[in-house]
Image (cartoon, rainbow, N blue to C red; front, side, top):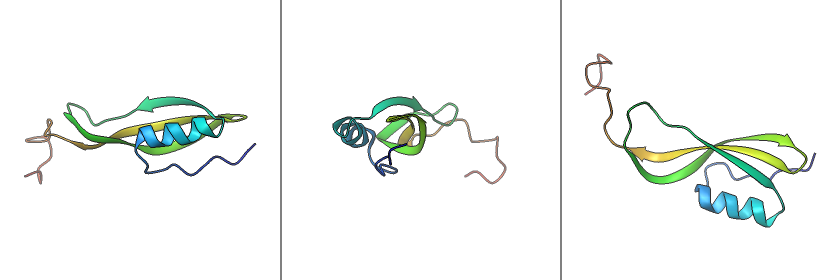
Length: 77
């Protein structure tokens, strides 16, 4: 298989542009903690080669607002 460009940590839009420019087919999956409020840029967390010049990206928002952590985790402030 061809070597995939290193796009880990890049903003999702920048990573997609680079991969498409270099001829890669990309599938994107988003992940997030439960009950989150999305904010901040989306960043690439993981790459999985799925075929010849095909890659799956897992991405998440860099930041998120307060969710349901209060009262669930004893040390949560």
